[in-house]
Amino acid sequence: MTNTRLEIATSKAKQLFIPFIMAGDPSAELTIEIALTLQKAGADILELGVPYSDPLADGPVIQQAALRALEGKMNLEKAIQLVPLMRDRGLTIPVIIFTYYNPVLQLGEDKVLSMLNQNQIDGILIPDLPFEESRSLSDKCEQVGLPLISLVAPTSKERVQMIANEASGFLYCVSSLGVTGVRKEMDDGIYQFLGEVRKHSKVPVAVGFGISNREQVTLLSPHCDGIIVGSALIKLIETKKSELLDSNQREKALSEIKTFVYSIIS
Image (cartoon, rainbow, N blue to C red; front, side, top):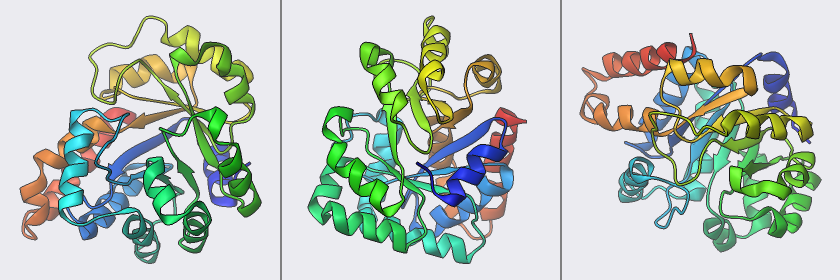
């Protein structure tokens, strides 16, 4: 299942580029600016992370981004409400909310899905909600026309076919074991794993975790339909934080983010 904006994006791009940023890092206003910059640089879909204090799937770089965003009082509701502000400023690409399940549980599944629909959001991804326990939410998502993006990992093994068969929107394929973070080399079994996933998936297969440079993208591209870049981008944003917060240096810092994206996907 896809919604129109996501369906168009996944059908038009030969190779999807999906950047991940953390809502509220380094500020809500700059999250909007960074999202617009990523769109100009060629992003096809935006993953908008929601800061959470116990992020099981995230490595140190994204954990620090979450802590910075939490200090700024960012939360799930505020992250969702950022998206129409992005739309008003010209963001047209699909936005997927990346959040853990506890914030969804606290607000209530029905309220979250209603907010996602009302705020022009195109899907939701919950890394700590196991596939086997997602049926109820998956059914609710289908009823309101929002994809619940599934993740599949090398450890999924016999579950790969089941998860891939029922994936909607696109399928997030975890490149390696462990948490997010830049890796110098991909695991040896990644290509065989991606081949197995693509054999069963009816939606595009995008690969994330550890991707930080053009060489990795070149190696992975023949084996997948999209690349997700998170930690490397978050690290650059962290490095440029003071410049981003300085209105006199902001444009230069945003330009360097754009250049980084070009260096990966061009």
